[in-house]
Structure formats: structure tokens, C-alpha cells
Image (cartoon, rainbow, N blue to C red; front, side, top):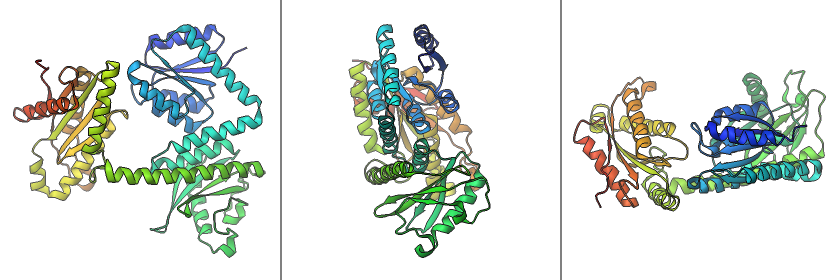
Amino acid sequence: MSKGRVLIVDDSRLSKTFCTDILAADGFDVETASSGMEALNLLKARDFDLVILDLILPDISGQEVLQRSKQIKASTNFIVVTGHASLDSAIECLKSGATDYLTKPLNPEEFKIIVNRTIEQKRLFEENSGLKRLIRLYELSTVISNCLDKERFYEVVLDSILQIINGKFGISISYDREAVNWQLKAFRATDEETAKNLADALISYLKLPESETGLSGRHDIMNLELEALGLPYSNIGPFLLVPISQNDGIAGYLAIFSELNGSYNNSDIENASFIANQATLALGNIQLYCQASELSYIDDLTKLHNIRYMDIALENEIKRAKRFNADLCFLFLDIDYFKNINDNYGHQVGSKVLIELGRILKEIVREIDTVARYGGDEFTILLVETNAAGATVIANRLREIVEKHPFLAEEGLSIRFTITIGVAAYPEQASSKEELLTAADKAMYKGKNTTRNIVVLAEEKTD
């Protein structure tokens, strides 16, 4: 009999083989994935008792895999695997719900003990239904509270409530009190047309006077029949209407629809109430985070990080690189002949070009890297755990993509330009934050004074 199903996520064939051999010999069913997206697809398709997750993957970071996996199924257990240089990332993963972490190279006996202990704890929790419910609610609250992205918030909350309430499918809608605007934000386990029809009917229902709906104050969870929405669907049963509050007002609703002959009991309502309370707290955190970010660390135009944030990130990453003897690279890039764009198209178009360039830079690099607008048409990129050779490859890729990209094409324009990039590596070209920034800046200007549209690697230190 199998001791459990384990998924190994690592792009190293040697590591996957090492882990698979140990766990298979110990009685586990093992599957493997070589990238974050492959792992997420497997986790959507079937259940695993445990995921062994390397933090450094070729497409998306291990931390993103963890967060998105918890959104799919919060009860999935994770053990993250890290090199010494990414220990801080492992600690962040523990905060996001990972059970434990291991450092490479793995010790076979320690690895086996931690896996078996994690599986045994999971089974003990599942044998106690009351404890299982509390643990599940705690796990879901962690997933919700870790979301600081307002655009993803309604998806995360909807996924969470569907994990604790046995609904057929669900939708979430937001309400902007200032604009008096309702909007369908997410739907799960149904098609888009049905979701839109239900959302439109629900919004019309919510706009009715309280005397007609019975939604006193609209802050209570309601167990409603589908007939209340006046829709002809014959295969959908009652639904729970769960309000999400913010600043003593309504910020949105979740609607969880049951099977035709389904029903919701007091336990479902208690669970929904818990999720709604956690969502309210999370919305408050998101509001505070957004306010702080906008005031302190976000560039007004591009919405990238600004020089103030980059200064802090650069200092922290250099300290970490020194501590763990890790690689670190800094890119300084500038648009070639940006003045011509402003002169030919106007400053408003120039600003839109900067916004689009910032979005492209953000999409190309990894989530663990930091992109910032330094000022004017200059941008900086901090590449963690990346050596000079790797940074040069990334810089050339950025340069080539920008050169081929028609900017503002959606507005009927096709503005093309090039960029020049300076690359500096720690510790080869610099031993401090100031030296690293200066070295990358000088390398960039060396390129500007020669051919432009080039990547220049800073000279190594002479001392």
C-alpha cells in the first residue's frame, strides 16, 4: 500500500532522480515536474499529499508556485528546497504556508525523516474532523492574508471559499462605491456566459431596495433560491450570497451556487462567515499596502518601483550575497535618442512609451528580480543569484525584444527604438552598492558613446 503521493518539482534531473529513488524505495508514489507551470498543471489535475519544491525554477519562482498552488488547494503540504543563497526566500515560503524547508545538497536520511513526518502529521489532522476544519480554515486565512494584489484578490477569495464550502461553482463581483460600479471579477467551475448572466442578474437584484430583497444592511450572509434572480436555469440549486466589507461598506460579494437539489447548512454559513471576515481584513491590508507603495516606493508614471525602493533592495541583496557568497548583477539601461520620440510625437506619447517599456521589462525578467525606473528614460534591473554571463544573456534578450517591438501599436503608432545596457556584477566589478551602480552606469555610457543598441559589461575591479 502506498504511503502517499508526492510531487517533486525541480529542473535538475539529478535532483529529481535522487528524490524519486529515495521516496519510491520508502513506499511513496512519486511524480515529477521540471518547471513551475508543469507543476501547477499537475496540481490542478490531481491531488498530492506532499510537494517537494525547488525555489529556483526556469519559468516562475518556487514561491509563486507555492502561492498559486495554495490558491488551488490550501491543504496541499509543501517542503521547499533551497540553496544557501536563497534561505531568505525559504523563510518567506514558510510564512506563505510551506511546512518545512531543506537546503541543498540534501541529506538522504534527513530528507526521508522530514517527508515521513510531514505525511504523518497530515494524516493525523485528517483523522480528526474538527481539527481538520480548523486547520483548513487557518490555511485558507493564510492564503487570503498573503494576497496584496487587488486585481487577484477576488480570485483568491473565491478559490478559498470553494475549498471549504461544497458548492457546484461560484462567482465574485466587486463594487466601487465612488464610481457606483459593479463588476464581475472571477468565476470558477462554470463557463463565462453563465457567469456573466448570473452576475448581471445578481447585480440587478442587489440594486433593488432592501424592502424587496430582505438584505438588511447587505452585510449578512444570505441563503437564497435561484428564483430570486429571475433566471430560467433548471440545473442550479440555492446559492450563498457572501458579502465582503471594507471601511464599513460593501466592497463586493461572493455567490456560491449548489447542485439542483443541494443545500447549505449552519456549518457552511459559519465557514463562509470566517472567509468573509478574513477577506475584509485582507482588503484593509491591501489598501494600506497600496497607499504606502504609492507614497514611498512606486514610480508615478510607470508604476514600477522607483529609485528609493531600488536603493533599499540593492543594499539588502548585496548583504545577502556577501553572507552566502552568491552572485548578483545590476543592469542600467537607457533609451537611445529618446529626445527624438518626444520631439516627433510629443511628451505625452513619450510618457506612454516609457510605461510600455516598463511593462515589457517587468514581463521578461523573473519575479524575484527587481525592475525600477531610475529617472527620465533610464531603468535599472537587479538580477539576484545571477552571474555576469547570465546577466549579459538576459540583457541582450531585453535589447533584442525592445528593438523588434512596435511601441503603441494599439494606438495606431509603430514607434521603434533601441536601448543601451550596462551590466555590472558583484563581486567581480564592485564590492558595494555604490560601486555596483556606478560600474553599471559607466558601462551603459560607454555603450552610448560608441554604437548604442549594445550591451556593455563593466570592467573588473583593479584593486
